[in-house]
Image (tube, rainbow, N blue to C red; front, side):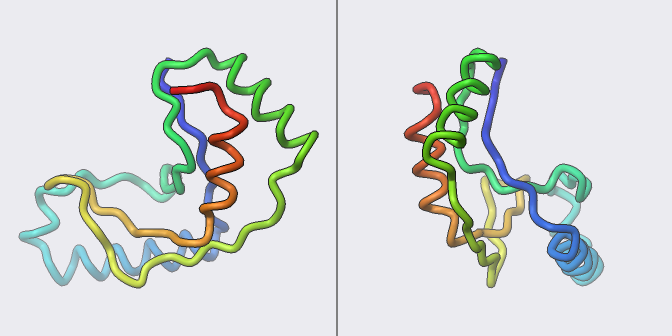
Length: 111
């Protein structure tokens, strides 16, 4: 199974991004046509892509790390501008989660 580890933004952040997305789509309808749009329920920040991995092994490793070391609090900052992955994926860069991503990478099985 293809796995990744992610965090989901709080509802107020999702609402703000949804408003910005609606404005972008309305202001640039021709550019928006080629993008792959997902709903807010799928918006997340990927910390690590595991690829083909065993779910139980990944879950156990991450739980062990969280209980032993904890992952600690992290503050994320989104933007200020969007980016693109290829022609179809629009993304909002997020900074401030590097330490958490490194802890997840250290705790998770190799990809």
